[in-house]
Amino acid sequence: MRHAGGAPLASWLGVFRALRAWHRYEAVGLETLLAPGAKLIVGYHGRPLAFDQCMLTVELYERLGYLPHGIIHGAFEHNRVLRWWIHGLGFVTGDDGSLAEAVARGEHILVQPGGTREGCRSFRHRYQTDWGERTGYLRMAIKYGLPIVPVAGDGVDDAYVGLNDGHALGKRLGAPAQLPVWLGVGATGLWPFSLPFPVKMTQYVGTPFTRHLEGPVDPADRAALRQLHQEVRGAVQALLDRARAPHREES
Image (tube, rainbow, N blue to C red; front, top):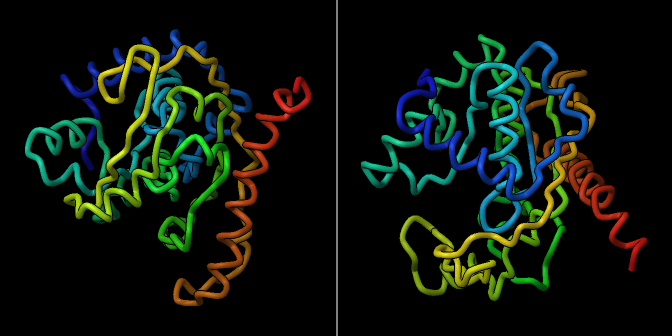
């Protein structure tokens, strides 16, 4: 298994420590992820990047001594420099077998089932999960016997104002590697050349979900996976609703 280190790790920690201060980042319920044992962290993908979860990896690195092993967009494997960078962080683009070593060491895995489809939407769609039928994370949790820890944050859809559905436009334009073509406005101009708005981000870590571990679940049973999928998605949406409740009360 690749370990984080060198220039990739130094750059990651530097950037997201700075953004942690910029966004006055706070993690609520972090003790769940500090308990022994590997877990699958499953989160909402804020726009256009999952800034809150990137900052969460820094919090965990400072306490546990490693970066959780993020599963990220496959496009990173198509560029030599980006491939070197993600490998230097211990990230992967899928379950290539090396994750078993991380799990054996008790290290967390991090995934956002909504991906860029969820993260690169317009301002009309905010703080609403959009995972479709993506159940690969459940198969992984079943395969490795991992509890699923839902996470979601407040402020994550306010760092940039999305102007379009990037997933749909990328598909329509035939963008390579199914990448989104997303337009967004930040504090100093257009993404990706703009700083995000300095909104406060608060990360909520939920109660571990273990129903998939309480009895045998056939990964080929699509109906069973769909039911579990809706329950996990619902847990993440509940965290989003909890995070946003004070804003609704103020309005």
